[in-house]
Image 1 (cartoon, rainbow, N blue to C red):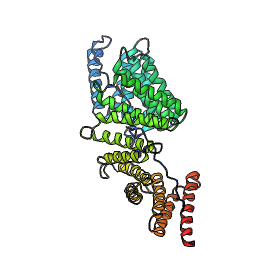
Image 2 (image 1 turned 180 degrees about the vertical axis):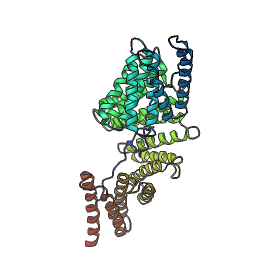
Image 3 (image 1 turned 90 degrees about the vertical axis):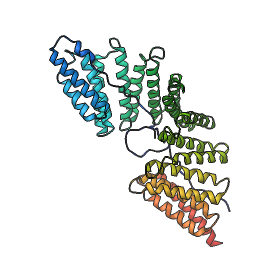
Image 4 (image 1 turned 60 degrees about the horizontal axis):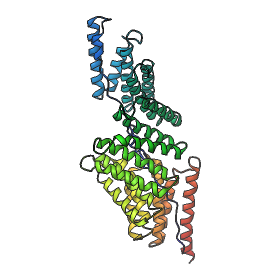
Amino acid sequence: MDKIKGKRNKRKLSIINKTDKKKKKINISLILVALTLIITVLMYYDTISTKKTESEDFYSQMNSSFQNANSLYLNGNFKEAVDEYTNILTKISPNSLPFEYAVTQHNLGDAYIGLSGIQEKESNLKKGINSYEEALKIRTVEIYPIDYAMTQNNLGAAYNYLSGVREKEANDEKAIKAYEEALKIRTVEKYPFDYANTQNSLGNAYWNLALVREKESNDEKAINAYEEALKIRTVEKYPIDYAMTQNNLGIAYMDLALIREKGTNLEKAINAYGEALKIRTVEKYPIYYAVAQNNLGAAYHQLSAVQEKESNDEKAINAYGEALKIYTVEKYPIDYAMTQKNLGDAYADLSEVREKESNLEKAINAYGEALKIDTVEKYPIDYADTQNNLGNVYVDLALIREKGPNIEKAINAYGEALKIYTVEKNLIMSQNVKSNIERARSLKNIDIAS
């Protein structure tokens, strides 16, 4: 009898270090997002005390307000910092104290960006962008080049965050433009550390843009930006930043592998994740260790489709297992479910080349673990995706043992997937799952007929 193979969906990677709490996926996963953006440390207003245009009491009061606002920001009290900076701006103007006005607007922008990670994301990001643009009316490239670059860098970060909420393409383009403006001043010769930070952020913006248009070209630009950052972010001088950029570089190479030179680019991704793991050890940086291991598992799993299937599936399984040492169901349920889903996919693929029954059982167990978190109520798309893959595994297991019961389990799993994959909401996936059901039923009918 010919093997009946259902269509299995692969979970995509997401960039790491995202500030929102939405469920992250491996896109080969943002999560990244993940993509880290730089918000510069707030400036202090030492120059105010030297001004002679107002009374000493006024400047003393302003200095106290500035220090209080900065302290609030640095302690994560973003709402209070916003209020304090806003209050300061009622007492100064771009005409009376232009330098101080620009610095206050810049710091207010930083506070709004911080607040956007807690509440009213879109609204606060827009307010942060407005504050940066106000600062740039004073902080011109000709008069204040260093401050201009700082504000442009943070403006780019704000647009990059906003692209995750609305108008992705347009806001990614604005982020790229702002980062490129910053790099006019932040050259590798004069400001190598800031150059590297901005190049890493620029790489994140190009990678995000690659998700919506000109994938190959923008992935290449992202890779180039990350490699520029790594000229400064060496493992010896900046090990933590080195690991971050190497992880981001690995994600970009995985994305490029979807278009061309799959094997070569996946090998480059694996190498980059390996470099990141030299620093991101389980003892020192357990969460980042888990992120890199999960990404490494995804890269090995994808590579198994083009070369050394058995060996690379084994490496994928090992990497996912390492990630699950940190991603426990109690502490990180969302990441636990994501990694269990990926682990199930790897075991299902490994079953094609060895120990079929045993590896299919392991796949079923992993999918079952994922479904403890990926419920139909909380995460309907992930629930449907996992149920569809679970159905495929039960069909394969039916070819080995207990045909009738396993076919019934497969059909039941497909039925669960169709609760979410309706014709109205997702026509393509609805058709795929229905096709899988027909294959399962045909297998059962063949057995009855014989």
